[in-house]
Length: 421
Image (cartoon, rainbow, N blue to C red; front, side, top):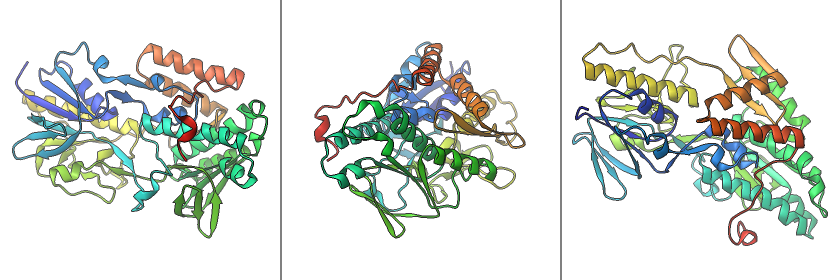
């Protein structure tokens, strides 16, 4: 093993793909992440909506690299990078020297300057976010069951999702199914079928990155499930008692934010240009401008395709970038010519609407409905890590299909009824 030290910040799709791509390269690798697990984010909304448990979509990073003595895993938070001295500073005071640095630190929620909305309108990026949303959804029904005031009861049974991208659409569909089909027989004082699920989008259509015909299908499928879709109406206020949508105030005790993201502060750490979302504007080999030994990938990077459009912030893109940077590092270490500039290969866009329909956009080929849902499910099971997770998720989905019952509906936090106001 050589003395070349590669520090990777972030254990998401891009970071792990890079580490996997450097297997056998003869370098020392240190992987730093704020959490001890890798998260399969495409299914995070299913944890938030009681379909899957946390252990089915997350895996300890140390376990993944237990058989890789070249990989050291550190649980820590990066606070700064000194690109001149080639060091990375952690919050606990530890400093790591590097020969090559890869920043794969992802993104977080963007509230467009209204960060005070976050406590009442949590986003969905982490397991903690998912379990917070799940708790609030389940508590809303429990509190409504005991509420005597009709107005408060209606507000408790109104769920508002802000943003109609894939996450917003998927959340709205599952919450509607949960309320209208899974829960009705379990409550005595409320009719959960009267639950309102409101999906708000400032733009002209849901799923704006998909073809218009698929977007229209998705909207009809949501409305068939009972979701109220409000388009062209920006949210101007989020409060504990509801949401201001244009000129209308909607009393709603559960709000979920799915309207935008902003990159990690990586651009500030290395003092390089960033786009409006805070993503580093990288070179064609995914290195940071003026810093050939620093690479930026995934949601932290702004990468422009040949057609002038940005590479989407999705898992396949991050994995492609991680694999590409591993090839660049290998070429440099072996003295071979550098690979051609990074080129993103779009493998299609997928989104589900509830548990019975989906849309898939492969470009020339577009699918919708039941067959798209099956393809969506098989694709997600395939990309899960390990046979156990694949079997567990497949069984959970089959159980819901056969019984209509969600398997992860436990509220486990202490002082449950005193939380969330």
